[in-house]
Amino acid sequence: MSARFEGIGLVSHDVVVVGGGLSGLVAAIRLAQAGRDVAVFATGHGGLPLAPAVIDVLGYGEGRVTAPGRELPRFLAARPDHPLARIDPGALAAACAWFLELAAPLGYQGTVERNLFLPTAVGALRPTAMVPETMAAGDLAQGGSVLIVGIHGYRDFYPQLLAANLAAAPSPFGSRIDARGVEVVLPGNAGSLRPQLLARRLEQPQVRADLASSIRSELAHEERVGLPAVLGLEHAREVWSDLQDAVGRPLFEIPTVPPSVPGVRLQALLTRSLRRLGGRLVTGAAVVGGEGVGGRLASVRVASSAREVEVRADHFVLATGGVATGGIVVERGGGAREVVLGLPTTAVGLQRDPSSGYFSPRAGDRLGLAVDRLLRPVDRQGQPVYANLHAAGAILEGAVPWREKSGNGISLATGYAAATAILGGSQ
Ligand SMILES: Cc1cc2nc3c(=O)[nH]c(=O)nc-3n(C[C@H](O)[C@H](O)[C@H](O)COP(=O)(O)OP(=O)(O)OC[C@H]3O[C@@H](n4cnc5c(N)ncnc54)[C@H](O)[C@@H]3O)c2cc1C
Image 1 (tube, rainbow, N blue to C red):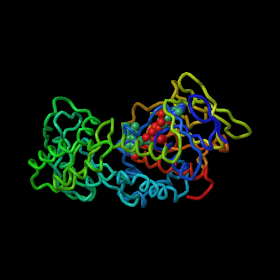
Image 2 (image 1 turned 90 degrees about the vertical axis):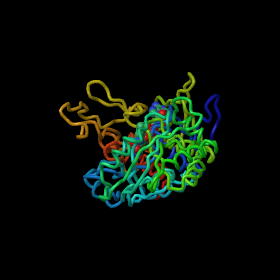
Image 3 (image 1 turned 30 degrees about the vertical axis):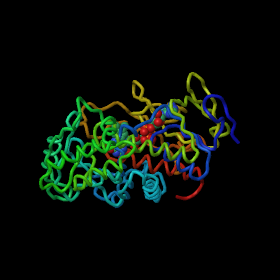
Image 4 (image 1 turned 90 degrees about the horizontal axis):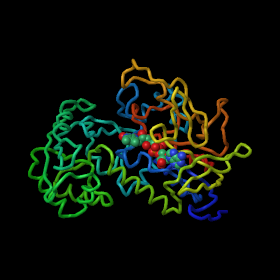
């Protein structure tokens, strides 16, 4: 039973999710699909609008990974505290299948069976498992010939450099990449262009017709065309497919530096999905503490607009992100603190070894919450701190997402699995 209170919404819910990044939204949507009354409280948007909106599952293990599904059992056997090792083995595949259906309006495609190799903004090839349709033709796993097109006035995208770097390295299977970079001028563009502004401009049919004609005049033998990821905000499918038809070659977006237009699209889709299902999302709301009763978390305190409100629920999901977004704070002197509930973290020896190289393992890399198989944070004895509290995403211990290329895969799979645990069912 729920009661209203002034300003925020409902005093009590079936489930409260703390954090509105990928992991929190995935858990919330799945719970709302199952008919649960869910509320998400979040200080901000997390990584979604900054990140390229691709779902990495495992890009690097012992070396570069071409088939994450095949590599994962071995990878996780050596890392029993990894978040993907904590969940049911079928949960990752189930979560990916669920996500492809949910994200169908953005045409997501891919599988954990095979990584795609997409160009980055600096022309490296990076492995990833699932991508929006606007990026899929950028898979250069088997090599190919590409024209990389920059747009004059749009900074942070250097087509010649990108193409030179792509051409300098073979594809993962040894095939050649033939790449050339050009910059075109968009008529009427009088200054510097920010990504979202450019994305909106390209939603005008005449602007993209002009862009297509400039690209056509530059095209030679190239089989495909890559552009910065700014092909529309709300109408990406229309912008991308129109442009592709007009250019006459497969066309793909290349993720750029933050902010990320594809990330904004994915965030909008997830937010809309949650609200359509009747879930609530309250942003600008910091959860600042909680009250436990008899081994269960009874409520959390939400601070919003200078008020603090107690919100009760039967179940809670903690999805506040890792060190980067403030879910965990590393303290001077080497300790670490989970911010909302003061849960124990794996805070051992966080001081960085100054002699270690940039990519070598660092103390604190795998910092986070230890959890049981239901993703419930556990105490130093391995017992759940609260029987009804689950954690998901970057707050979990045991992974090094930036090195493994596993970040959004972990958030998706554990958000999904946290919801499964609450629903009390199998995947
Ligand atoms: C710049 C960037 C690039 C990335 N690139 C990739 C990539 O290429 N591939 C990939 O797979 N992944 C990528 N990621 C994703 C990243 O690796 C993580 O997996 C993912 O963002 C973590 O999601 P999350 O939901 O756990 O946390 P976050 O996205 O960090 O969300 C945390 C949420 O918790 C909220 N919050 C925090 N504290 C509180 C509080 N006290 N009360 C209420 N709310 C709170 C925040 O406001 C936010 O809504 C990237 C992320 C970033 C930032």
